[in-house]
Amino acid sequence: MTPPYADTTDARQAIIDACLKLTAEGINQGTSGNVSVRAGEAMLITPSGVPYEDMTPDMIQRVPLSGEPTPQGNLRPSSEWRFHQALYNAKPDMHAVVHAHPVNCTALAQNRRAIPAVHYMVAAFGGHDVPLAGYALFGGTELARNVTAAMADRHACLMANHGATVVGESLPKALWRMGELEALAQGYILSLSIGTPHLLDRLQIEEALAAFADYGHRD
Image 1 (spheres, rainbow, N blue to C red):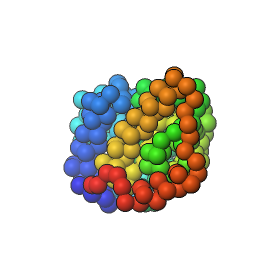
Image 2 (cartoon, rainbow, N blue to C red; image 1 turned 135 degrees about the horizontal axis):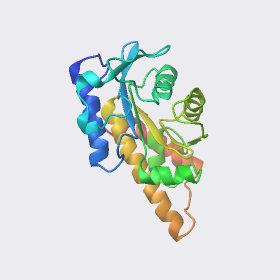
Image 3 (cartoon, helix red, strand yellow; image 1 turned 45 degrees about the vertical axis):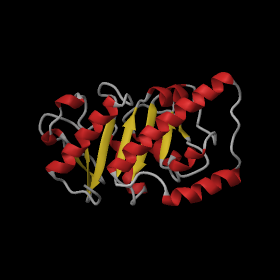
C-alpha cells in the first residue's frame, strides 16, 4: 500500500499494524503513542486510550485537515490530533505522522537536548540536527504550533519533556525514521557517557544530505 492513501479498511489496518510494530520493537508502550495517515482532505488517526492490541479498523478515527473532528462511535481521536493535522497542512508531501515515547528520545527530551550532528544519520531527518520542540501541554494548540515550527524544515523533532515525532512520505518511511531516530538518540546518550562527542561539520552534513537524496527505506 503506497500513497496517496484512501479511507479503506486496509489503510486503517495498516495504522494498527504500525502501532503493534512500534510496541514489538520497544519504541512505544501502552497507549502513549499515536499514528496517522493522510487520506485525501482528512486524516485517519488512532483513537484515544485504546490499547493497540484491542484496536479494530472501525475504531480508527477520521479527522478533517481543517477544523475540529467529529468523534465516531464512542471513541475520540488521539488527544494529539492537533499537531498531526498541523503537520499535514504544513507538509503537503508527507503522508504519515508517527508520535511515540521511545526511551532514549524521551531521555534527551527530558533534558531538553536536541540531537546535534553526531552521526551522518542526522541527515535522514532533513537537516544538520534533530531539533527540540518547546514544551506545551499535550493535546493543545500550543504544542501543535511548537512541533510544526520545530519541524519546518525537518522530518523529525524531539518534544521537550514528552517524546518524539516523525513524518514520512509513506507510513513505512515514517516508521523507518522513528526507528532510526531512537537508535540515533541511544548512540548520542552512550557517547555522552564516555566523553564529548565529536560533531561533523556543516560541509560533512551537507554531503550526507545530498547522499540521502538516493538513500533509505524503499516502499
